[in-house]
Amino acid sequence: MKFCYTSRFLVSALAMFTTTHLMAAPATQTPSGAKAVIQKAYMAENAAAARKDLKGQWKYRTADFVYTDQSGARHTGEGLRSQEQMVYSHAKSIKATTRIEKFTLNNKTQATVIAAENATVTFSNPQTRKNVVMKMSGRVRDTWVFRNARWLKSQTKSLSQIVMMDGKRVQ
Image (cartoon, rainbow, N blue to C red; front, side):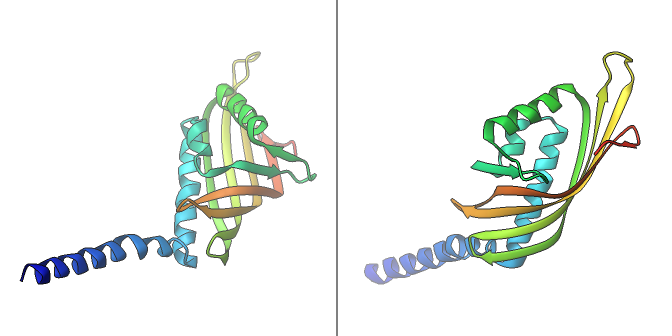
């Protein structure tokens, strides 16, 4: 009788473990599940930017993250972080949004996203002491990889970008 009780307990425990652990992970690897997780990551990155939280913004990037600008120049790690930190130190406010336009799950461990990005950064001009508003809009192609049960952005390629300063186009 004791063996039967123990067997049922083990079967129940195994079923519960399978349902909660093994079944939960693949949901983030289906097209709709991965897209939802990645959209939340974009939202978290944008919220971190609004708080000027560099660590929070890099939470969803791989250690070997690469940004390629429109001219083909590649920017990595520390250089990107120092540029972003400089923006944060001078910005009065940052508001950013990212919207997924196209999502492709290439396999269960890689996804490609075409996203529209918009940001408004307000700076204070130290000479005039007036606010300067920089607005950026563009499209990017991001590559996301599924590592250690998380989706992380491994590279970004700028497809287009428009930068305006106080309503005048600068790029």
